[in-house]
Length: 207
Image 1 (tube, rainbow, N blue to C red):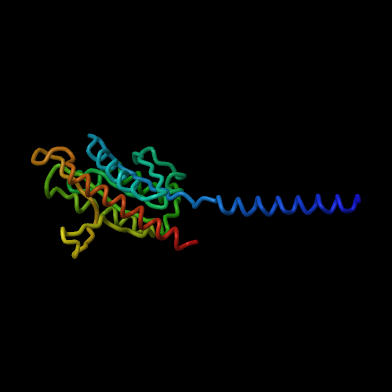
Image 2 (image 1 turned 90 degrees about the vertical axis):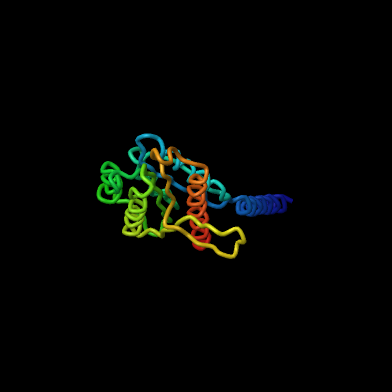
């Protein structure tokens, strides 16, 4: 009788362990998709645009989005991110000096490994042709040289039979077109959504 009780007790323990393991496997949630929107802003226009990028990234299920100023970003922020949207204002047709020093330190001082993370760029500037495109290109070159996979926002015509991408998202904020418009914020959101979706695809491919 004692032997039967012991055998039954062992069988019960094994059964409960197996059930618990199976339940844990079923309830295991997929890893979070982490998107970092990193920006440099003095007057607030680029900060507003960065929030637009974040809004688009949050459209993707599972995306956890962090918006931070360049000077507040840590090595942990960068290493945890699956996708990074990097943006700043245009100073004399180029990246602001303080921003350039900060992002260079990500490599030279922090020694962050950016390999195969998804990246994209955005810029704001007072002039209609004041160099925003050059800033976007320069930021993309920084991301590419750090071994990242880069992408820009997607657009399509009203019929939906023509789809194209652009290098990045920009906003004109000077006297001729002050502030950040809703159409410009739409471009920001498209960039954020594209980066998050691409990062999700790469994350899924690793499984």
